[in-house]
Amino acid sequence: MRITEQQPGVNKRFIDPASVSKRMDGRKITNSVFKTLFFMATLVALLVLGILFYRILSQGIGFLSADFFQNFASRFPEKAGIKAALVGSLWLMAVVAPVSMFHGIGTAIYLEEYAKKNRVNDFIRMNISNLAGVPSVVFGLLGLTIFVRALALGNSILAAGFTMSLLILPVIIVAAQEAIRAVPQHVREASYGMGATKWQTIVRVVLPSAIPGILTGSILALSRAVGETAPLIVIGVPVIIQFLPSGVMDTFTALPMQIYDWAKRPQADFQKVASAGIIVLMAFLLLMNSIAVLIRNKFQKRY
Amino acid sequence: MVNPTTRERASVQELIAKAGNNKRKKIIEKIIPVILFLIAGVSVLTTVGIVATLIFETVTFFRQVPILSFIFGTEWLPFSNKEPKFGILPLIVGTLKITLIAVVVAVPIGLAAAIYLSEYATDNARRIIKPVLEVLAGVPTIVYGFFALTFVTPVLQTIIPDLKIFNALSPGIVVGFMIIPMIASLSEDAMSAVPNAMREGALAMGATKFEVAMKVVLPAALSGILASVVLATSRAIGETMIVSLAGGSTPRFDADFTGSIQTMTAYIVQVSTGDAGYGTPIYYSIYAVGFTLFLFTLLMNFLASRITKRFREAY
Image (cartoon, rainbow over all chains, first blue to last red; front, side):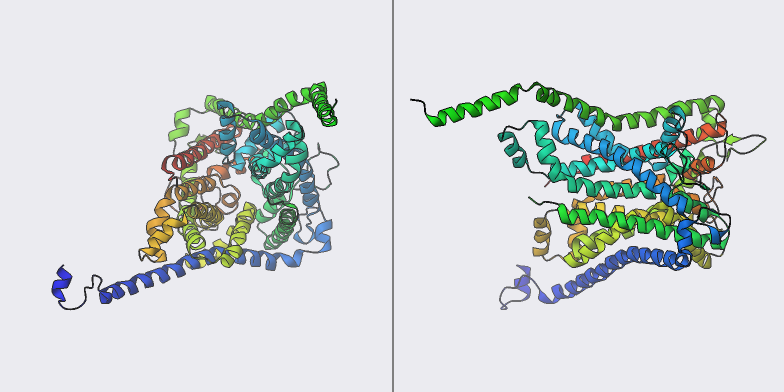
């Protein structure tokens, strides 16, 4: 009513365009200022990644030669090579992949297909999500006590492989659970309708269509195991190894251990050797990730 | 008058009955769930193993070092020949320094990135930025550590001349960048889960996108955002390689960020790379430190799950 009193005669305007547009301009400016700020913040994160890659490539590319792949560790930077570490990481994979996938997929099948809603299964679920938050160095302490000492495996590939398997187990379980959950219920029911038993349905219907998702998640988890350093240090994996392992009970060294050793050395040239090692490690991870993405894009069914 | 269809039906029934009577199949159906349950038990055994190991060896440590001097001691001198001292506080302070810097770096940048991705970015921008953030999350920590030591520290030294080669600032910042993808992607998930109707309601009332983000989306997604920050903090506390490479190995009970420090994780690495004899107090001390670290991260993870349960707004 006050407005009509102030502006008698004019058709009743309850909103004053002038004052609204004045405030609107300010609000619009705030909006675009913050939009730019948010975008810049995102760019900063991406920029750091760019600098990191550029630095490591420009430092290490000079040391990346055929010799680098054929030489063992050395006190002299120009003779240092990554052969033992690369082969050691492959051996580690050979243990971690089957062990962690067997347990991870088994647990996921149990939780998704068999587990009823009760306290025991709730406890298992809660336990898995808590396990995912335990620092990797603590898994190292577990490996040192149980595998290295109690089971007397020493600092062998097997001890390190078991430790790493437990470390990535929660990640694989969650990935496999999601893949199994993505298989629609009616597919299972169709299988039951044909007279198949539960286990037949799981093995011949659910798993085949969930396997691309499971593989993708597992490979991503394995790539975490390849890059992980702390548990290996705690287990006591050595760095200067002049031979290749011939079995899972041999001592070994791995890519991140070797890089850690080089990075700690004071000589400037070893920094470049470390960069070269990082390039090899990152290439290894990139390869694994590409395979994972490839599997996802090529084989994943959509219902 | 035998109807052929009834006969067929009967034979199918017989087949099913036969299949049902197959003993081997029945046994398999009974055994498989048990086997799978045992496999699922491995993850529980792992937790039991971790807790038992830590408690058992920590108790042994407390037989050699009084528990009160461990919890309240402000000096950590395990390698001293005359009188070794095991007061955990300097290591906790070192860990908190790194965590503080990391959170100060990561929360604003991570949240800004999350708001940008969920509220402003076009589908194309999102399709490019999200995988790059995933790459950032997939870089091994040893690489970040090397980056902190050989790049971030020298750059910071040109700005702060007093900065030592080993300091809290450089690894703290790099740990911050390491946890940015975690905060960004978890917070973005929480914001994307806010229904569009709420955004559209606010927009229809004349709110700008910024106002929608701040006054509608952020409050609605608060529990998810808080949980992401707590989880990221837990990651920062447990981070090992960055602080071992760039943080140094000087446990100190002070508030200095420019000098060498030592975190709980870095101490465990330092002892593991050296040759502490089995059975010495130094050997058992890594379990006591590991147990403290475990309690810290467990507390944070518990807090995160409480936040999501308690403050979740369901739509």
